[in-house]
Length: 272
Image 1 (spheres, rainbow, N blue to C red):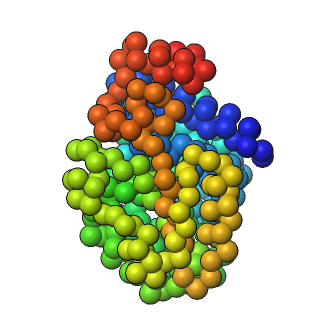
Image 2 (cartoon, rainbow, N blue to C red):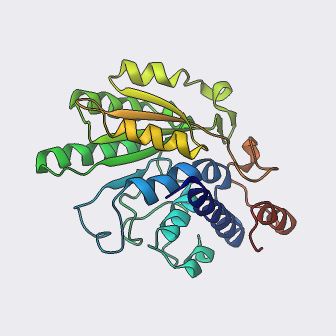
């Protein structure tokens, strides 16, 4: 798939992120928009997931460790043909399978129920160990937020990943530098993350999480790493693609009102 096609898919993902959050009048648009390009590329170009194998262990798996950005996950699953378009506007509604945090029992393609920060990467490490023991050659991918790296459990998982030489694991961090209370560096500074992950035994790649050429190069390298886990630090912008949401902590967990929604969809070329 060429870059222009990927951009179109990512733009659809962003439109559906907004549809989901606006319909629910709740959710987390900022971190969903920052992760949209990376998750689009992961599902459409890297992982071998499709309608035929979605319920099988014989495929790559993804754990959304920053489990509150389900608007991005559900929108990417829709783009990959694993959800129906009508499902998106049921987000967070009573009896909808598309709840605010992902539930693996309700949504095909959700490989782990997450939400408590730090637990997703820990589960991904367990999955990667299990694949090694089972001689299953498929990879495990997980996406964290940079604010999430304030959790001590993240570093326990990182220590185990390196100890067991999990070269079937790709840990990714969405480095948008914002969390619910403001700048990550001001709330509890986790940087420099590259030095930390390197010290824990990872092969670290830094890349622009909104440039599809850079995203491709980073994934290509990450899956080539041997005898140690890989970590990709994505440099991103919270709220990417919507002018008034970009780099604003207030959009971490707020839904747009009608006029804001119309403006955001117009910027993305979609129908409100």
